[in-house]
Each structure stands twice: as C-alpha cells, then as structure tokens.
Length: 203
Image 1: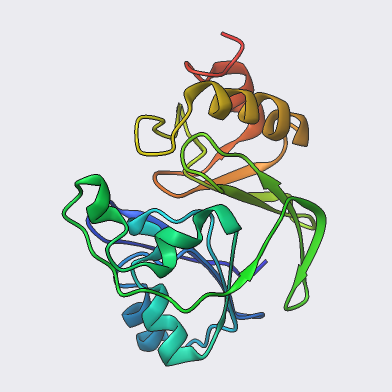
Image 2 (image 1 turned 180 degrees about the vertical axis):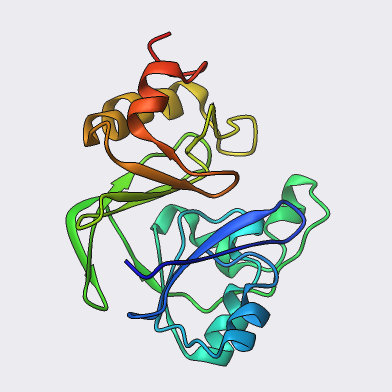
C-alpha cells in the first residue's frame, strides 16, 4: 500500500494519506499545506472523530480540494460549529466545515476503491470511528488505542468504561496481526496491545 503520513499541529496529530486513491484520514493543522507542497489532491476526507486537532484543516481542504467529508453523526457539531469547543471552556475555535456524509459501523465501506471495515468505538469522544483497511489489515484507530496507552476519557463526552470495553470487544478480536496506526505516536500491533497494554491488556 502506498501510504503517506503527516504529523503536525500543537498536539502532534497523525494524518494518513493514500496518494493512489486520494483518501485522507484526519486533518490536523498544516496538512493542507503539506498536501499542496506534495502536489497531492484529496478526493475524500475521513474523520476518525471530531476533536479539534483532527479536524483543524478540514474546512480548508473542503475549499481547496472540493473533497467529500465523512464522519459519524455524533461528531457533527464538533466539525460544523465554529464555537463548539468554547462552550466547554476550551480556548479553541475552528473554521466550520460544511456538513458531509455520515458513516455508521459497517462490515464494508468502499471509498474511492478502498474497502474498509468501520467500527464505532466511543469513550474517548462521541462518534469515534476506527477504519480497518482489509487488504493490508491496517487499522486507522484515531485516539482510541495507542502504543502502550489508550485515548483520554476525561474530555466532554468521554466514558472510560465504554472506551475500554470497545477496545476489548471490538478491536482485539480483529486479530493480533493487525497493525494499528493511531492519531498520535508510533504504530503498534493488536497482539502487542492485547497482551501488554497497561490499561486494557492481559498483563
């Protein structure tokens, strides 16, 4: 798989781009400029969730690329309302995106020729989606599961029990060989996290 990775913004957020299909997963600050420098065009932007560090450049990409925007309906307000985060006391404001298409949990979502299994795993954030690319068995997990850690559950809409159960009951059964590409930090494997993760692992 031809996959390119961009990491940027205040929170060092990872974004993943498929040059052959034009799919971008998540839109941290600076990814629009990076894509422009590379000469790459986005056809579809998939958002794992609506937290500001993952949607920062989404509206800009819609404007510059005319791309489709897909996300879970539970995250729509975070993505389309300029002052959403300010209502919770956070000093952040985003350029609101135009509403896109809603994605539900499904065994098969074909986007621009790429077949994903989509899993809804809230707890870090309402509407958190994980996208499993079936051919290479790569899970684009957003901020659900990290190498040696898990997503925060103390932000608005977070739920620790829901997050942990989602990881154990939905992600771990995908198989130990699945590679996890997270919203922050390095890649890992389901098998590594299933056996050693201090929050949800077996040890």
